[in-house]
Image (tube, rainbow, N blue to C red; front, side):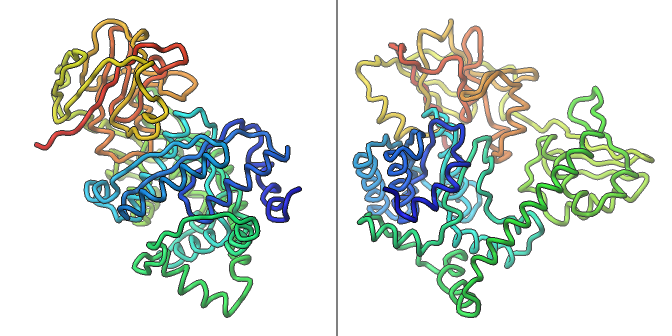
Length: 473
């Protein structure tokens, strides 16, 4: 028999999980994600859902022994629920320093990228997170404080695409208090993260100080913000549809990575639709929208009102107007940190260097390794390949125009350049990506994505392990 909490969860889960046979549950060990895992498993046991689940956990290594204890707790949770668990350890402090990001932002980026990779590696069609209605309210307040437009007011979507993967949030209709009460009623144990009470973090300050003050004035503030989010999402979908119709009228000349659109058409658009059109064109051209501020969009708006002008924008985008034409184009950014003709042969069992990278390889026997342990602990800098599907010598080289490969998890092969344009990755990571290939095909766009064509199968016996590590200059 389901509880009222599980019934309410099921109302949203039915729609979000439709057509999905395997889902990665993002579980930190905290009350929200642990309750989500318990409730979904109970719904499946009672026949209300037929989806299979895998638990994914990220150890951010920010709290030393406590972080390791969280990981151990999630392992035990998976065992008690009869679910496989995959974990990954990441040095968030190091990543934040390298990328010049705040700890909050670095943690979010690494967490999302890691969850996407876990989903791909474990055959999951979607990632489920435990965001709830209070999270939605906090997000919207945070965006109010920073300044936001219609997109920001959409808050958290129940379903979205992140780094090319589907994310679903089945608990958005539930309050945090409901989750805690359900956990207490069903004797669910969870881990407390002391850092969640550190009000030096903006979100925690909103959660523990600002939101309670607002609720004291209006007990329905969280529900009101939720309704505002839903209404804005409907409006955003309307704007997106209109923008797609306009983009469909843009010309795509034979020249690579360029769009032309009628200037008069753009000038007639309402500002909200104009923004979505520009945003859509930049996305198609592969620009990283995180690098675009309100000032950039204002400059583009002003340029489109002029008959003849030209300016450069982030990520190699050039905008020029010529009479009735507005031309968006993307120039090729440098894609290598070494001579293009440089090629290094990789001998299995020996270490070689390629630019600032050190590449180590070895041959493994399937019977002598723990596949589950490898998948749980691996990072993006190590991959396993089926030795029987590797043809001829393995070589390492820089990227070349026209390179194509079949990204693991994708339905078909893609141009490497287009794949990198679509990937929401740091521009430095994209520029420094390099190729590891055999005599017939690309095995790995290192250290970003391996190829489908040499992945392990249940019949794989001999395994080639390749690790790429950046060396200190």
